[in-house]
Amino acid sequence: MVSNGRSALVHDFFIQDGGAERCAIEFARLLPGATIETSFFDRERFADRIEPARVRTWPLQRLFGPTRRFRALLPLYPIWFSTRDLRQYDLVLSSSIAFTKAVRTRRDAVHVSYIYTPMRYAWDLETYLADSTLSSPSRLAARTIRPLLQRWDVATARRAGVIVAISETVRDRIRDSWGREADAVIYPPVDTIEIPISDRDDGFLLVAARLLAYRRIDLAVEAATRLGRDLVIVGDGPERARLQAAAGPTVRFLGHVERATLLDLFARCHAYIVPGEEDFGIAPVEAMAAGKPIVALRAGGARETVIDGVTGVLFDRPEVDLLVDALGRLEATGWERTAIRARAEVFDTSVFIDRWRELLDRLGVGPLLDSRR
Figure (cartoon, rainbow, N blue to C red):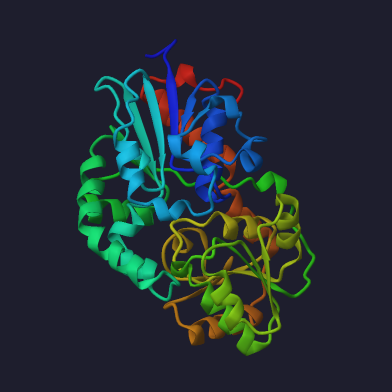
């Protein structure tokens, strides 16, 4: 039992708001005494939720600042995190989008790694590259280093004593990619308390996601354009220009919005669309908390969160014709908003905190947790 030990939280980068950052922020609150190790940290975006004095960044932060071109530095992240010496800590919680599970810890320390997915660039590269705007040299470089990244990903997956997956989907990927069983599945947190159930319906469809090719936002854009349906897209990313060029007049791109604006969009939307495979998908569950049905690809996290015919409509393949058909079924179904809301509450932040507290208590590091949470 650790009573006066030191703890560290490691997260890949704090650049954009996303589901992984939401989890890392909850971890920082759960471990108020933890040092936070990362690469880039955007103070303007995150300082109101994470005390900057707790954060240690890599040298490139001083050189570039929290650059939006952080993905271009892919070859450097494995080197940086795999050489980070955290042996002074009794507990290390690595919140690992791709790299942080590689940090070095003492053999007698507790190292728990929360895995959002095995490294996408290594194991699902062709899906990541498909229809993306990456240049030919970038594609060639990614394919060239893929075998190296796969070997690195497998080798560093052994460094964590305990592996926790964000979903059953990710648990399966861990088994297939690393040949290792995850020790637990703990779903990411959804703050359902801040999202009231809503009877408002302004008729528009909603997507809120990073605009990356593998998320298949293009399917939602094409379906809405074909049907003349209002579609609001929240989020930014390298595919924004391509998507805007393909969009008809009923599709609006809002880019990054403040949290209050996103909550208002959840309250006013007609339905939320998940056109591609999500590792889990916090935003669609947030839409369900507002009582809104989901139209989602039958893959990834949506299979675990959306109940077909009860909280939404699932379609089988990432094809625009099937999405158009699913939107037709959406209109032909009567939805019970309280049932949709109840499903969202299964994934509430309080459940996330309770599950993590139980796990860390079993591992003997419970005294390091915030007693108020």
